[in-house]
Amino acid sequence: MLVRLDEQVPIARLLTFLERGERIACDCANTQAALAPERGMQKFLKSQARQEAMHALVFQSAIAWLAPKHIGDAPFLPALEAYRRILNEALARRDLLETFLAEQVVLEGLGEAILSRIEEGLVKRRAPFGGLRRMLLHQEEAHHRFGRRMLERAMAEGRIDAATLCRRLEAYLALTNQMVLTLSDLFESIAEDPSAWASDVRKFLPEWLVAGEPKSDQPSALRGVGSENR
Image 1 (cartoon, rainbow, N blue to C red):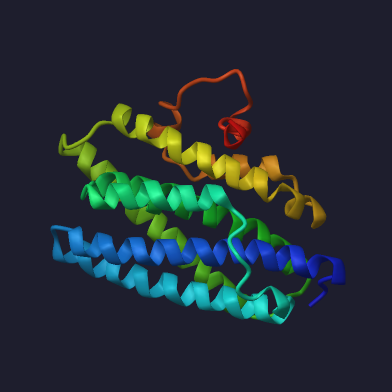
Image 2: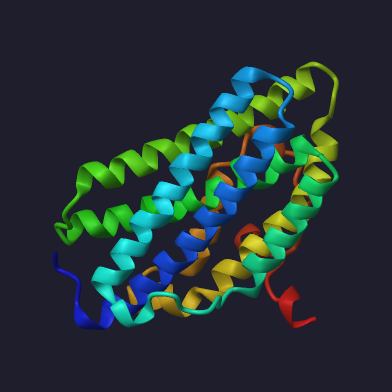
């Protein structure tokens, strides 16, 4: 694999972020399965939880291979911890629809965006385990599609509307922007544009959410950035 010595630690730290995100997703999917009212939903969510746990182990193994000294690094993303807290608050309220928005749609969309970008770089570097990487990406896509289907079905049944979802979306997207800003040095060290990664997240949002996003004078990729300093 053609990874330069100066790229090993930045890539390992990006994978640490993904590993922690997968563990959040695993815990969330397990709780969602307990809250889900239908057997089919429960089955999918339990399967997702197992897959997320496996993904976390894969990322941990990759970190150990790239930069073993960085295994078990302390969290370096306060915004990710804030995201976990408000997601857990929604779970505690048993607000299943908000958790689908926050986890399957937004967080999985962020993971899918980052994995897609990393995959492009790994292909160029002739990295091994291409089949395993494609399987992980395929599973992330399936989790994301599930969340979208659940929200679209709820809207069709009149249980929630797009305007309500858009209002709830704001806090989660602001935190994903902060995550990307915090990781910007790592992105730049491997010749990636962090604002492009932030923009990628919105590519995975349903059109009905993007259309309802509050307008801002700031570029969409940077909305919410800087709020961690307030």
